[in-house]
Length: 502
Ligand code: SAH
Image (tube, rainbow, N blue to C red; front, side, top):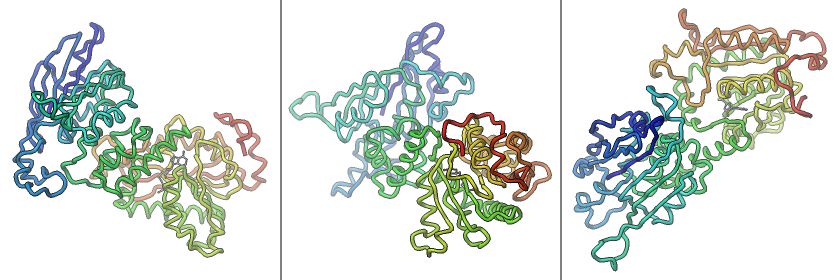
């Protein structure tokens, strides 16, 4: 199994930068042992003008069989022999994709510590795979690669036997791609599409395959016309996982369409994290409920309500007479509706609760006139430059008397055993703040919008690094006066669009 990646260059932008991008020195031949054999990386040519990196995977067919993974689908009568005599060692396939992700891990992620600017650059690239199994033939290869920004997608069927053209074509093609792309994008496409074309995944499909697919598909898969086929084949036609992938891609498209840049790709991780950290999630909910009771709130907004756990807890207390859960994610809202059994709820209960779809990046008249708003673990899901818009939507436009905001305290991350140093808790977190950063932000918001603010530690309050969750309790400075009249004299950094202000 063999794949080459070439680029051209100039004295200023030498082609040998490919070595930096791939984290593999052009002057050396390197070998990596993978679970199925040995992967070799070498450079047949490496000059400033032209540089080619080759990845050769030598598969050990016996190892493959011993691992119980080389059997392919179905049980042919000659399966015993087929285990040893099969095309796995020779054809570029899902194994090559696995080797690619192992050997070029940083390149796939678009990381280059030595030259951080490099991965962002598009370069003239040429990818060649001499023997690519393609179930679906050349036509499918075109359908898969044509929409992905290549100038040239050249697919040549490989004849079964060159001596006997009348035997026709094999199920292999030779693929050449040429175009100006970022290397990481090209690698991520290959990582997904090689096994899709192979259509005989050799390893068991685990639930985290959906995460891998969504990660590798970031930026191209959601809008790909064949995203259905790609997801289904990548996930070895596993129905539930495919359904899950398609729902999450739908959310990505939704967010792209409304420009809110909300990525839902890590939802499953979120669920898992939520499960693992049940005690903290529960403590957070208790802290929120206590603050709402303390504020005497009856009509409450849960903004970014997710799957509705807090809405459910609020419903259990009669003092909360009206509860609105809002989220940008339809999927989350559907799950919330299921959790609450909205359909089967009696009229009295159901009149207390409303679920709304909407984005906090925009002002929304439906949110005006409530006693309190909760933003539990939401602000860190927005890009920093979008926060002022959220601030205006909540504190300027909706303007409830009380606003509760919780967010992770990044200082506490060193106390999470499973969290590698320097990482955020969740893939979709755009930022995580120290206590000082959160205070500075909250103080700024409070003074700009006429609120007072107090801080509450949630969870184990570590003497050194503080609590895992930090909560700000904002109270309108003039709560005793008619709150409607206060909206006129607020200074904001964002000008509301015509007709949007409440
Ligand atoms: N409040 C819940 C969920 C937190 S996860 C809890 O504490 O468990 C963050 C939620 O914010 C997600 O459900 C996500 O869909 C939502 N979200 C992210 N950006 C948003 C936006 N711009 N508008 C509304 N909701 C948003």
